[in-house]
View 1: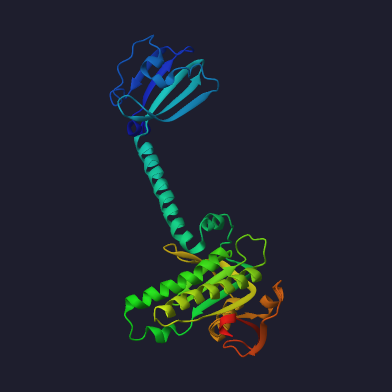
View 2: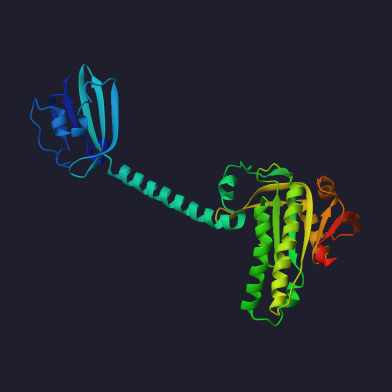
Length: 327
């Protein structure tokens, strides 16, 4: 009885061919014209056309709109050779479905907007490729190459200069540093001030991560050299860029809270790449031994160096490659 009152139940008993025998319930609520005995059920509800006799014992039509505008669930079922049609109000259900669909549409639009923003940092189409990667909730270990690139002399350059000039210079250099990463199959993990951190080996590639990182590093030096040359031509200070690369196992995962999350990597190789970048001269790529050994290039032009790095237990052997213009 509570269900009947709450959901405004109306009922119809019909014979095998579909002719009405008896009816009752909340017909006024649905503005259903009063049927006559012997009238066919499809003359009252057009959605019932062809429904009877039932192929199976019961049938449910959800969220059907009546001419009055009411939304109903229509339940057909058989009992003792006769058929019942129960009509129950589905207004709340239909509204909830509408709201859910609206929310789903909003989320799709939001996802597309976020994808467009991410594509500016990851490269066009990279967002969709990332969505296909199954990241473990608790993080996972992977062998990747990590690259840090930093503008040398940026802090002293910023002193006593207008903020607009500083940001114009910074954006010009960052664009020249980020594009080679994206073109080279890397992902920009973060931008911190005048430094860029990138990861190679996460996206599918026929080339090994160390080679991708080293090639991107060379392109970074070439493109930032062009920026420096143009700045010199117009009488502005030209700044160099140093690059550090390390390869090894890192922990990859999603960090953050439900309000904001980000894909990030942590581990020894991340720290090592940052330390190598801090020791690289302007126009120099400084890489760890594992990256160097994995390169399929001619090793001519690389110079080994033994370095004591902050946070490292013992000295390490690193290999430096200096841009030809800086030698």
